[in-house]
Image 1 (spheres, rainbow, N blue to C red):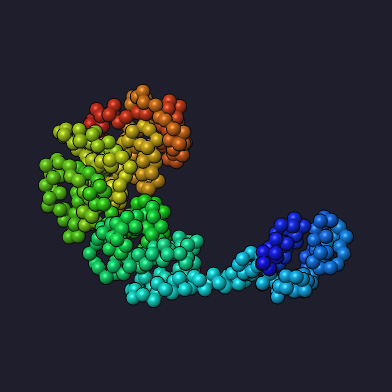
Image 2 (tube, rainbow, N blue to C red):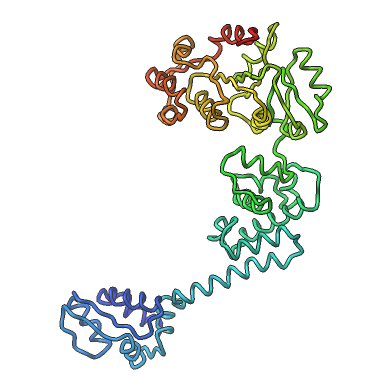
Length: 424
């Protein structure tokens, strides 16, 4: 067969490899009449060119025009019309120049977005689609390597439908229920999935805010757009704070719990209805340990409010602290002496600065709380090395030196004494 003979002639002969590489590069660049040149040609390469072009080449110089190569192909037994047919027979597909590839890509991208824009979407979705295509941003990077593939079209459609739903409905809805409504998969819009990542870009564009980079920023953006996460597991617990509504008055139920010295659980959606939070003593004590929090709340004569973060702060805890940060309240934080506990303290400092005080987290407190529990894993130890707050670094260095955890339970009496003292 003609095609098989041409492929065998050029591909199986080592003498053609470097010449074809130059030829391909020039064709891709759109050069119609360039020159093939090898300054260090081997005798084998010269013989290969001589066999096709009918001219004698003396190594190490090998030079001929692309137009001569094309003419020799037409006159050869392969009877190839032009270079386009040559590449088609050699590769099995046409060789498109870079200019052609870019033009084809622009057309492919346009058709991709135009297909979704042709559907009956609202203003938010239409504006987002236009901005993605024109600016190659606002989520374009999530799709660019898959444009033209069915899954990318599905992701785009689900997000556009989500924007439509949020424009049409004032009432909030759970993200999983919205995800099921637009895709029949309750997890399609989860942040770890491409459609979930694309959704964040779309919501940020719609709201005119920067793309969130932190977990709490992502949750805040979803909540702002009426998309709620799991409201049962996203909670914080507090005792003694004054929580007010839109009318500026303390909420009756929370006031009764405060006056009775009882703690209450607050979910993220409940906190969205709270318009103000303050401390009667202008300070609040933060604990990550749930058991210790429960134990302290059972004691009498506590003078200061307490908040339990239950380890790493959930969005509900951040919501509550943001409300408190609008007042003159100081945050006194106590955590375990391990990479996680010190990292939480460091992040609070990075978020709220000088408003944060560290509650019995000095190196001497660590020595009182140290246990026999080894801190395993170099990754965890590196967390201690990355502590940024100057006030925490001496404690972090002490933990690094000992490589043993210290636990809050050892300091329960000190915590209680501070909480019972109106001036401390």
